[in-house]
Length: 306
Image: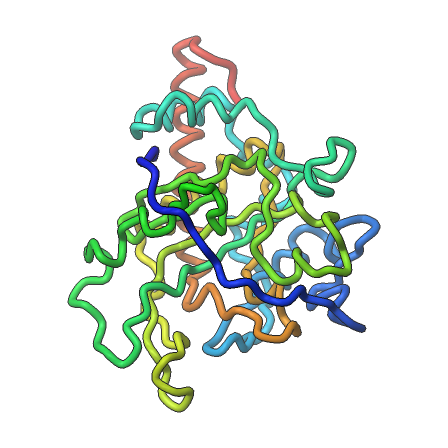
């Protein structure tokens, strides 16, 4: 999970976003005093996980979350102990430095003001790169090294656009620790709010190549592959989500980038073709494994049960 330094990153400068009217509270009704979206954690997640369609259109609202999220989000049900999660990470080859971060908190809003709300939301993105434009997809996008090279997202000047990147083989690049307050959406960076939202959201990018969608010119990146992500990506995303939630002390509320920026000019259209049931299955599988590890350790007297 550790990588050598890549080149210096330069991102195009864009004019500051200034929101007006209903844009200020966003699609899911954000309360800027409470720093929470409207409703229970499950109701928030149902809104924030609206399916994302091509060109950033939002699909119909879900009637219910997958059970794996509905029963957990916002609470502590099934949240593993740091000891159990540490053991699993160690068995999967994580470095000790990464394992040690489980004892650290997550970031706080207002640019890490310790008295502000801690990170509550975790945003799922896709990279929308590389863009094959009008060319056909490679034979296997999950194995192609040109697509899955995580170094293309690493910056020697430490300005990567997310906390974590996950390629289609399930490999994870930790760009910023979860203690680092970061912003990666138009909603968070709107000039109206100053630094108030910086640190309230954690960000995860999933590598997904794109092509040009007919009818929008040859340079657009609106066409995503189907399936949108690999099983290995969902498995690693479940692990990252569990680590972030363990550090937050509750199952964080997931959101899609496109939903967060809904109604804002030139909003993004990611993540495309995200299968929420596949992610939920990966999460259930991981939690089951962690609970079996806890039970085994408890039976052998190694640790207390969760």
